[in-house]
Image 1 (tube, rainbow, N blue to C red):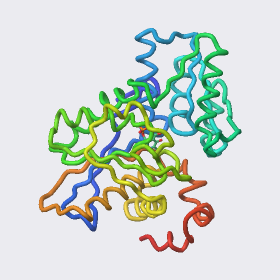
Image 2: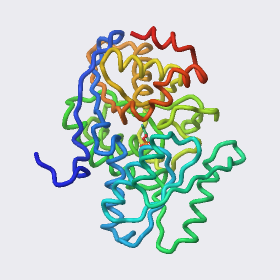
Image 3: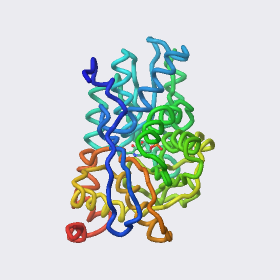
Length: 324
Ligand SMILES: Cc1ncc(COP(=O)(O)O)c(C=O)c1O
Protein backbone atom coordinates (compact mmCIF):
# COMPACT_ATOMS: atom_id res chain seq x y z
CA UNK A 1 0.00 0.00 0.00
CA UNK A 2 1.26 3.49 -0.86
CA UNK A 3 0.41 6.27 1.63
CA UNK A 4 -0.06 9.97 0.85
CA UNK A 5 1.18 11.11 4.26
CA UNK A 6 3.17 9.41 6.99
CA UNK A 7 0.51 10.26 9.61
CA UNK A 8 -2.04 8.24 7.63
CA UNK A 9 -0.06 5.14 8.58
CA UNK A 10 -1.52 5.09 12.10
CA UNK A 11 -2.83 1.72 13.32
CA UNK A 12 -2.74 -1.73 11.75
CA UNK A 13 0.43 -2.34 13.72
CA UNK A 14 2.20 -5.71 13.50
CA UNK A 15 1.36 -8.44 15.97
CA UNK A 16 3.88 -11.04 17.14
CA UNK A 17 3.60 -14.22 19.16
CA UNK A 18 5.99 -14.75 22.06
CA UNK A 19 6.66 -17.90 24.05
CA UNK A 20 7.27 -17.58 27.78
CA UNK A 21 9.73 -20.05 29.20
CA UNK A 22 8.01 -20.19 32.60
CA UNK A 23 4.42 -20.24 31.34
CA UNK A 24 4.21 -22.68 28.47
CA UNK A 25 0.42 -22.70 28.37
CA UNK A 26 0.44 -19.01 27.48
CA UNK A 27 0.38 -17.93 23.84
CA UNK A 28 1.28 -14.26 24.13
CA UNK A 29 0.23 -11.99 21.26
CA UNK A 30 1.77 -8.52 21.30
CA UNK A 31 0.70 -5.53 19.21
CA UNK A 32 3.86 -3.54 18.50
CA UNK A 33 2.43 -0.06 18.88
CA UNK A 34 5.79 1.60 18.42
CA UNK A 35 5.31 1.08 14.69
CA UNK A 36 2.85 4.00 14.70
CA UNK A 37 4.13 7.09 12.82
CA UNK A 38 5.18 9.24 15.81
CA UNK A 39 6.40 6.20 17.73
CA UNK A 40 3.65 5.17 20.12
CA UNK A 41 0.12 3.93 20.78
CA UNK A 42 -0.83 7.58 21.46
CA UNK A 43 -0.98 8.26 17.70
CA UNK A 44 -4.31 6.50 17.73
CA UNK A 45 -5.80 8.83 20.36
CA UNK A 46 -4.25 12.04 19.01
CA UNK A 47 -5.50 11.47 15.48
CA UNK A 48 -8.96 10.28 16.51
CA UNK A 49 -9.56 13.04 19.08
CA UNK A 50 -8.50 15.83 16.71
CA UNK A 51 -10.58 14.43 13.82
CA UNK A 52 -13.67 14.00 15.99
CA UNK A 53 -13.40 17.47 17.56
CA UNK A 54 -13.13 19.01 14.08
CA UNK A 55 -16.04 16.93 12.76
CA UNK A 56 -18.22 17.82 15.77
CA UNK A 57 -17.22 21.49 15.30
CA UNK A 58 -16.04 21.63 18.91
CA UNK A 59 -12.85 23.14 17.51
CA UNK A 60 -12.07 24.93 14.25
CA UNK A 61 -8.92 25.86 12.38
CA UNK A 62 -8.40 28.93 14.60
CA UNK A 63 -8.57 27.00 17.87
CA UNK A 64 -5.54 26.75 20.12
CA UNK A 65 -5.29 23.20 21.42
CA UNK A 66 -3.83 22.81 24.92
CA UNK A 67 -2.71 19.63 26.67
CA UNK A 68 -0.49 18.67 29.56
CA UNK A 69 1.87 15.86 28.57
CA UNK A 70 5.56 15.20 28.97
CA UNK A 71 5.50 12.14 26.84
CA UNK A 72 4.01 10.28 23.93
CA UNK A 73 0.70 12.12 23.86
CA UNK A 74 2.49 15.48 23.64
CA UNK A 75 4.62 14.16 20.78
CA UNK A 76 1.62 12.70 18.94
CA UNK A 77 -0.60 15.76 19.42
CA UNK A 78 2.12 18.16 18.32
CA UNK A 79 2.43 16.19 15.07
CA UNK A 80 -1.30 15.78 14.35
CA UNK A 81 -2.11 19.41 15.26
CA UNK A 82 0.67 20.65 12.98
CA UNK A 83 -0.59 18.51 10.11
CA UNK A 84 -4.06 20.07 10.55
CA UNK A 85 -2.51 23.56 10.89
CA UNK A 86 -3.85 23.87 14.44
CA UNK A 87 -1.96 25.79 17.12
CA UNK A 88 -0.83 23.53 19.95
CA UNK A 89 0.45 24.53 23.39
CA UNK A 90 2.04 21.69 25.33
CA UNK A 91 2.34 22.10 29.11
CA UNK A 92 5.31 20.16 30.47
CA UNK A 93 7.33 19.97 33.69
CA UNK A 94 11.03 19.53 34.52
CA UNK A 95 10.70 15.72 34.73
CA UNK A 96 10.36 15.51 30.95
CA UNK A 97 13.17 13.68 29.16
CA UNK A 98 15.58 15.61 26.95
CA UNK A 99 14.49 13.58 23.90
CA UNK A 100 10.76 14.18 24.39
CA UNK A 101 11.23 17.89 25.10
CA UNK A 102 13.31 18.26 21.95
CA UNK A 103 10.65 16.62 19.75
CA UNK A 104 7.75 18.53 21.35
CA UNK A 105 9.58 21.88 21.08
CA UNK A 106 10.26 21.24 17.38
CA UNK A 107 6.70 20.24 16.51
CA UNK A 108 4.35 22.26 18.76
CA UNK A 109 3.46 25.95 18.55
CA UNK A 110 4.54 26.69 22.10
CA UNK A 111 5.84 24.86 25.15
CA UNK A 112 5.00 26.04 28.66
CA UNK A 113 7.21 24.52 31.34
CA UNK A 114 5.79 24.54 34.87
CA UNK A 115 8.77 24.56 37.22
CA UNK A 116 7.15 25.25 40.60
CA UNK A 117 6.33 22.01 42.50
CA UNK A 118 2.82 21.79 44.02
CA UNK A 119 1.87 20.94 47.62
CA UNK A 120 2.34 17.22 46.87
CA UNK A 121 5.90 17.78 45.69
CA UNK A 122 4.93 16.93 42.08
CA UNK A 123 3.77 19.17 39.25
CA UNK A 124 0.32 17.84 38.37
CA UNK A 125 -1.73 20.42 40.31
CA UNK A 126 0.32 23.34 39.01
CA UNK A 127 0.13 22.03 35.44
CA UNK A 128 -3.68 21.98 35.72
CA UNK A 129 -3.64 25.48 37.27
CA UNK A 130 -1.53 26.68 34.34
CA UNK A 131 -3.91 25.11 31.82
CA UNK A 132 -6.90 26.88 33.40
CA UNK A 133 -5.02 30.18 33.22
CA UNK A 134 -4.20 29.61 29.52
CA UNK A 135 -7.85 28.72 28.81
CA UNK A 136 -8.92 32.01 30.42
CA UNK A 137 -6.33 34.09 28.58
CA UNK A 138 -6.55 32.60 25.07
CA UNK A 139 -9.80 33.04 23.18
CA UNK A 140 -10.99 29.95 21.28
CA UNK A 141 -8.72 27.60 23.19
CA UNK A 142 -9.53 23.94 23.96
CA UNK A 143 -8.07 21.61 26.57
CA UNK A 144 -7.94 18.02 25.29
CA UNK A 145 -7.86 16.59 28.86
CA UNK A 146 -7.02 12.99 28.03
CA UNK A 147 -8.07 11.82 31.52
CA UNK A 148 -11.66 12.93 30.97
CA UNK A 149 -12.13 13.04 27.20
CA UNK A 150 -14.39 10.20 26.01
CA UNK A 151 -12.83 10.33 22.54
CA UNK A 152 -9.53 9.20 24.07
CA UNK A 153 -11.16 5.86 24.97
CA UNK A 154 -13.27 5.71 21.81
CA UNK A 155 -10.10 5.93 19.69
CA UNK A 156 -8.86 2.58 21.04
CA UNK A 157 -12.28 0.99 20.90
CA UNK A 158 -12.61 1.72 17.20
CA UNK A 159 -9.05 0.94 16.14
CA UNK A 160 -6.79 -1.05 18.47
CA UNK A 161 -9.47 -3.32 19.97
CA UNK A 162 -10.97 -3.92 16.55
CA UNK A 163 -7.56 -5.07 15.24
CA UNK A 164 -6.92 -7.27 18.31
CA UNK A 165 -10.28 -9.04 17.92
CA UNK A 166 -9.67 -9.62 14.21
CA UNK A 167 -6.10 -10.81 14.59
CA UNK A 168 -6.47 -13.19 17.55
CA UNK A 169 -9.24 -15.76 17.70
CA UNK A 170 -10.59 -16.60 21.14
CA UNK A 171 -8.97 -14.01 23.37
CA UNK A 172 -8.75 -15.30 26.96
CA UNK A 173 -6.88 -12.42 28.58
CA UNK A 174 -5.91 -8.83 27.72
CA UNK A 175 -3.23 -7.05 29.77
CA UNK A 176 -3.08 -3.25 29.47
CA UNK A 177 -0.89 -0.69 31.22
CA UNK A 178 -2.86 2.25 32.56
CA UNK A 179 -2.07 5.95 32.73
CA UNK A 180 -4.90 8.16 31.41
CA UNK A 181 -7.08 5.04 31.19
CA UNK A 182 -7.96 5.64 27.53
CA UNK A 183 -6.52 2.40 26.17
CA UNK A 184 -8.05 0.04 28.73
CA UNK A 185 -11.44 1.78 28.69
CA UNK A 186 -11.73 1.61 24.91
CA UNK A 187 -10.26 -1.85 24.45
CA UNK A 188 -12.14 -3.54 27.33
CA UNK A 189 -15.65 -2.74 26.10
CA UNK A 190 -14.96 -3.96 22.56
CA UNK A 191 -13.13 -7.15 23.61
CA UNK A 192 -15.88 -8.02 26.13
CA UNK A 193 -18.47 -7.63 23.39
CA UNK A 194 -16.67 -10.01 21.03
CA UNK A 195 -15.28 -12.39 23.68
CA UNK A 196 -17.53 -12.09 26.77
CA UNK A 197 -15.39 -14.54 28.77
CA UNK A 198 -12.14 -12.66 28.16
CA UNK A 199 -10.53 -11.29 31.31
CA UNK A 200 -9.25 -7.72 31.21
CA UNK A 201 -6.24 -7.21 33.48
CA UNK A 202 -5.10 -3.69 34.28
CA UNK A 203 -1.41 -3.15 34.93
CA UNK A 204 -0.41 -0.44 37.38
CA UNK A 205 2.89 0.45 38.97
CA UNK A 206 3.70 0.72 42.67
CA UNK A 207 3.36 4.39 43.68
CA UNK A 208 0.48 5.14 41.29
CA UNK A 209 -2.93 5.97 42.78
CA UNK A 210 -5.11 4.84 39.83
CA UNK A 211 -6.30 1.64 41.53
CA UNK A 212 -6.08 2.80 45.14
CA UNK A 213 -2.33 2.42 45.58
CA UNK A 214 -0.43 4.57 48.08
CA UNK A 215 1.14 7.61 46.36
CA UNK A 216 4.91 7.26 46.12
CA UNK A 217 7.61 8.85 43.99
CA UNK A 218 7.74 7.08 40.62
CA UNK A 219 10.52 7.28 38.07
CA UNK A 220 9.36 5.34 34.99
CA UNK A 221 7.16 7.48 32.75
CA UNK A 222 4.19 6.28 30.67
CA UNK A 223 2.54 4.10 33.28
CA UNK A 224 0.56 4.94 36.41
CA UNK A 225 -0.80 8.29 37.47
CA UNK A 226 -1.04 10.64 40.45
CA UNK A 227 -4.78 11.04 39.87
CA UNK A 228 -7.67 8.70 39.12
CA UNK A 229 -8.75 9.22 35.49
CA UNK A 230 -12.45 10.04 35.04
CA UNK A 231 -12.78 7.92 31.87
CA UNK A 232 -11.83 4.76 33.81
CA UNK A 233 -15.37 4.75 35.17
CA UNK A 234 -16.40 3.09 31.88
CA UNK A 235 -13.63 0.48 31.81
CA UNK A 236 -14.52 -3.19 32.34
CA UNK A 237 -11.66 -4.51 34.44
CA UNK A 238 -11.51 -7.97 36.02
CA UNK A 239 -8.24 -7.72 37.90
CA UNK A 240 -5.33 -5.38 38.61
CA UNK A 241 -1.67 -6.38 38.78
CA UNK A 242 0.81 -4.02 40.45
CA UNK A 243 4.41 -4.19 39.33
CA UNK A 244 7.56 -2.78 40.92
CA UNK A 245 9.76 -0.40 38.94
CA UNK A 246 12.82 -2.56 39.60
CA UNK A 247 11.12 -5.58 37.98
CA UNK A 248 10.04 -3.43 35.04
CA UNK A 249 13.67 -2.55 34.34
CA UNK A 250 14.69 -6.22 34.47
CA UNK A 251 11.83 -7.09 32.11
CA UNK A 252 12.82 -4.40 29.61
CA UNK A 253 16.31 -5.88 29.55
CA UNK A 254 14.89 -9.38 29.17
CA UNK A 255 12.72 -8.29 26.23
CA UNK A 256 15.79 -6.81 24.58
CA UNK A 257 18.16 -9.71 25.20
CA UNK A 258 15.78 -12.65 24.80
CA UNK A 259 13.41 -11.39 22.12
CA UNK A 260 15.37 -8.53 20.46
CA UNK A 261 12.57 -6.14 21.40
CA UNK A 262 13.78 -2.67 22.39
CA UNK A 263 10.66 -1.38 24.13
CA UNK A 264 9.68 1.35 26.58
CA UNK A 265 8.90 1.18 30.30
CA UNK A 266 5.21 0.33 30.06
CA UNK A 267 6.04 -2.62 27.80
CA UNK A 268 8.36 -3.94 30.50
CA UNK A 269 5.51 -3.34 32.97
CA UNK A 270 2.92 -5.41 31.09
CA UNK A 271 5.48 -8.14 30.43
CA UNK A 272 6.30 -8.25 34.16
CA UNK A 273 2.59 -8.38 35.03
CA UNK A 274 1.93 -11.28 32.64
CA UNK A 275 4.82 -13.31 34.10
CA UNK A 276 3.73 -12.49 37.66
CA UNK A 277 0.07 -13.30 37.01
CA UNK A 278 0.59 -16.70 35.38
CA UNK A 279 3.07 -17.75 38.05
CA UNK A 280 0.22 -17.74 40.56
CA UNK A 281 -2.59 -19.07 38.31
CA UNK A 282 -3.15 -22.74 37.70
CA UNK A 283 -3.70 -22.79 33.97
CA UNK A 284 -4.34 -26.29 32.66
CA UNK A 285 -5.13 -25.38 29.04
CA UNK A 286 -3.56 -23.25 26.35
CA UNK A 287 -4.68 -19.61 26.74
CA UNK A 288 -4.47 -16.70 24.31
CA UNK A 289 -3.15 -13.59 26.00
CA UNK A 290 -3.07 -10.23 24.21
CA UNK A 291 -1.10 -7.13 25.13
CA UNK A 292 0.59 -4.16 23.51
CA UNK A 293 4.03 -2.63 23.64
CA UNK A 294 3.23 1.07 23.65
CA UNK A 295 6.53 2.63 22.60
CA UNK A 296 10.17 1.97 21.72
CA UNK A 297 13.13 1.93 24.09
CA UNK A 298 14.87 4.92 22.48
CA UNK A 299 12.81 7.37 24.54
CA UNK A 300 14.15 5.66 27.67
CA UNK A 301 17.85 5.73 26.83
CA UNK A 302 18.39 8.29 29.63
CA UNK A 303 16.37 6.26 32.15
CA UNK A 304 15.44 2.57 31.92
CA UNK A 305 18.40 1.70 29.66
CA UNK A 306 20.89 3.99 31.40
CA UNK A 307 22.96 2.03 33.89
CA UNK A 308 23.92 5.08 35.98
CA UNK A 309 20.30 6.12 36.27
CA UNK A 310 19.29 2.58 37.25
CA UNK A 311 22.07 2.41 39.81
CA UNK A 312 21.01 5.75 41.31
CA UNK A 313 17.35 4.75 41.58
CA UNK A 314 17.18 0.98 41.82
CA UNK A 315 20.12 -1.39 41.67
CA UNK A 316 23.66 -2.08 40.55
CA UNK A 317 24.19 -2.46 36.78
CA UNK A 318 25.73 -5.93 37.13
CA UNK A 319 22.29 -7.13 38.26
CA UNK A 320 20.98 -5.92 34.92
CA UNK A 321 23.88 -7.48 33.01
CA UNK A 322 22.94 -10.82 34.54
CA UNK A 323 19.59 -10.78 32.68
CA UNK A 324 19.96 -13.23 29.83
C1 LIG B 1 4.34 4.37 26.92
C2 LIG B 1 2.94 4.39 27.38
N1 LIG B 1 2.36 3.24 27.75
C3 LIG B 1 1.12 3.20 28.21
C4 LIG B 1 0.36 4.35 28.34
C5 LIG B 1 -1.00 4.26 28.95
O1 LIG B 1 -2.05 4.51 28.11
P1 LIG B 1 -3.34 5.28 28.60
O2 LIG B 1 -2.95 6.72 28.83
O3 LIG B 1 -4.28 5.14 27.45
O4 LIG B 1 -3.85 4.64 29.84
C6 LIG B 1 0.92 5.55 27.94
C7 LIG B 1 0.20 6.78 28.09
O5 LIG B 1 0.72 7.88 28.03
C8 LIG B 1 2.24 5.59 27.45
O6 LIG B 1 2.84 6.73 27.07
